[in-house]
Amino acid sequence: MDLGISGKRAVVIGASQGLGFAAAKSLAQEGVELVLFARSAEKLTAARESLLEIPGAKVEFVTGDISKAEDVEKLKSYVEETGGMQILVLNTPPPPRPMVDFIQETDDQRWEDAYQLQLKGALLVLRKLAPLLIDHGWGRIVAITSASIKEPLPNHALSTVFRAGVQAALKHLAMELAQYNVTVNSVAPAVVVSETYRNFHKGVDERISRIPLKRPGTLEELGATVAFFASDLAGFITGENLQVDGGYTKALI
Ligand SMILES: NC(=O)c1ccc[n+]([C@@H]2O[C@H](COP(=O)([O-])OP(=O)(O)OC[C@H]3O[C@@H](n4cnc5c(N)ncnc54)[C@H](OP(=O)(O)O)[C@@H]3O)[C@@H](O)[C@H]2O)c1
Image (cartoon, rainbow, N blue to C red; front, side, top):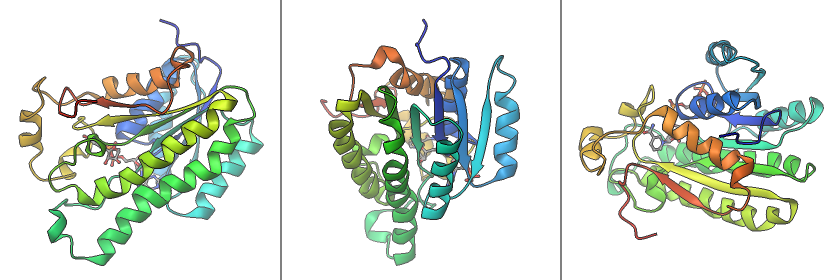
């Protein structure tokens, strides 16, 4: 299937490993040019080298911290000065670890860190980069969030509270950007085997046992879903959130 996005340019946040890298890889396989963003130049260099093994791949990167306005501004300037973008993949950093129950989250600094990484960073990226999408008459925003936005997961308050804000921002943007033919959607994993997924929370094995499909998701499955939402074929879907969780979430819709 041709997703119809060859030659488009995407910015992928949190792209040097894990889910963000998987999204970048799926897009590169569709012929999308990439601008990767994360903090470590070393990890981004390795990611770029790996992606360049895909025939025809074009990959650049900008280093920075999603929670720092000056870093996101630097990314915006780079993209503007080098040809713009049509696709934005917003993959936020994980919350502080280890995750514990809400009532045990007594450390103000952990709440502040979670806010900076999950909500402030996401809003910075959306506020500064979304305007770049409206100039092309075609655009896509795909956010990688968490199953917890529909069904709060045990020990996950530091994530759920702020991701709910991200989801609200995405819904607003979906309504506002539709007039420019820019769609805004999100994918929500429960457990995907990434480099760090075992560090996220207590009881990952217990969580996997609650997945009806009885296994965690793969990076390829997550990346393919992001690529679909970014594709031309998904042009009539906006404001949606799709669980990529093997049936974990029990909400009716
Ligand atoms: N894996 C799962 O099972 C799962 C399930 C549900 C939700 N999620 C969520 O999906 C997201 C990605 O998960 P993952 O497993 O891929 O995480 P990961 O392996 O820790 O990768 C995080 C990526 O984000 C970058 N990053 C971290 N902090 C950053 C910052 N402050 N500014 C910019 N970039 C930053 C990292 O590179 P640098 O460190 O170099 O910056 C890396 O590229 C997280 O929000 C996670 O909570 C994951």
